[in-house]
Amino acid sequence: MTTPDPATVPELQQEIERTRKQLGQTVDQLAAKADVKAQARAKAAEMRAKAQSKAAEMRARATEMPAQLKRGEMAQRGWPLALTAAGILLMGSALVRRRRST
Image (cartoon, rainbow, N blue to C red; front, side, top):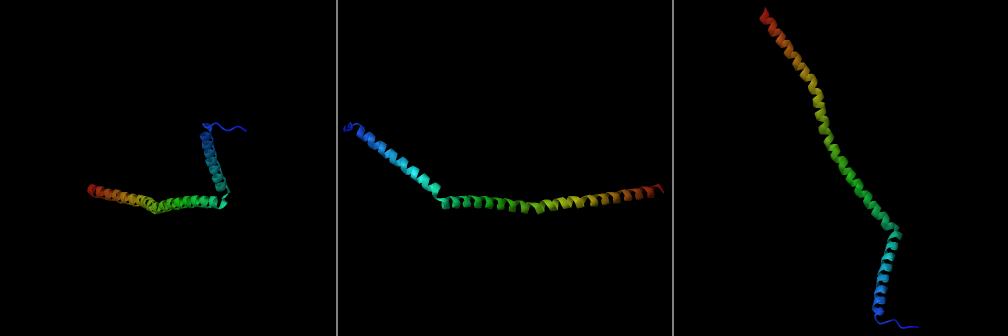
């Protein structure tokens, strides 16, 4: 058996430390993958956040709709009123002309 060179001993110790850190990280990653409950909780939290966001969006749309509907109804109601007013004006002007001509 040969004794390692004294210059390589610190290098070997550093490599051993790097290997230990990598091994620790790998074990942590494997443990996280094996923790099904934690994964399920994370997915549930993600889905809950999406649902809350969508619900807020739908609530905002729902509050806007009645105002839009009212504007649309008023516009639809306004046309018959405008036509009636125009008809009355035409009849009135026809009566005024008729009186003037007689």
